[in-house]
Image 1 (cartoon, rainbow, N blue to C red):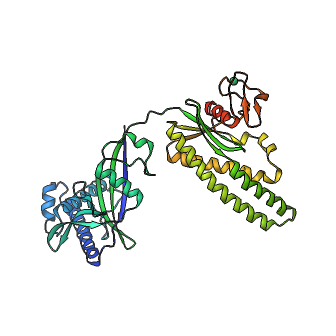
Image 2: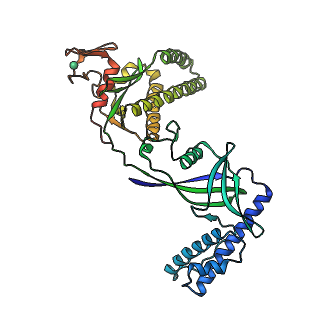
Image 3: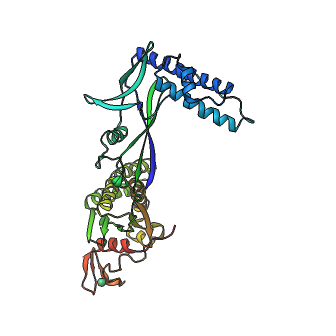
Length: 386
Ligand SMILES: [Zn+2]
């Protein structure tokens, strides 16, 4: 089990001027209470908590907040005592954050709007108020978990390691003003089961006919991205590029490359997303890719003018897979690309004549699409230490 604590910051939703004035009054009283408690401690360092609370009682704040001010002062005072030789006596600034302990605040939904319940003051009266807060996707994910104890596994903020998550524990909170805006921030802690790290890997082969194949050798399942549609567009680009290159119009060439890159970035994003989903669905924790820096032979497939953009597209896909894999708590590892297309994924024999165009045929009887076979081979290769 590992202990985790996160902080969620909610902007207050359009607090009225009257409310803002009240928060400022509370803040100034909170600062005053904290500073007074510090002074009491300076005079008589061994005061009891109850005595300090009694001394602070004349300050118009809810008693729970006076207790927070006292706790804050005690901890600052003790900290000062340890470093008294080097530090001046502490004091709290006027625009301090107002602190709430975990029993002192709550959240609820009111007709679809998130509201924060905190003790406030009206004159000398203490009133619990619910104030509306703004909530983004990320905060909503955690707020729902706090309120229901459950997580939405379809949220983009969900991670596989949350599967065995404990019930959430409310932590302390604070209300503060930053650059003219008011925020309520709270902590939330939970325990995660140390995930039993499987060493299961899927392999990803990047080719030309099938732009990418992800394959799970354990189950024989695979996911292919056909390059036909992309290939068609790219051939058009390649033709245009050669024309422009002959005309030596460098500006136009740059523009064309820029356009082609944007298109490839989009496709790569879609492929990377699906590959990571495939890995997760397969229960894999590792995505294996060929170490492209070792590939030389690839170049012979590409005409000179197209090399840059092809190489760029391959690396871009790799970057996107790596980035999205990290978000899903998967690792990307590299394998030696040596003859991955000539090795049989079933019997392990490497032979040059295994491959006929896009078909792979082995003497052991196994036959498959060549890129799919290569992806199986990649998934079983030992990872390189980089
Ligand atoms: Zn074979």
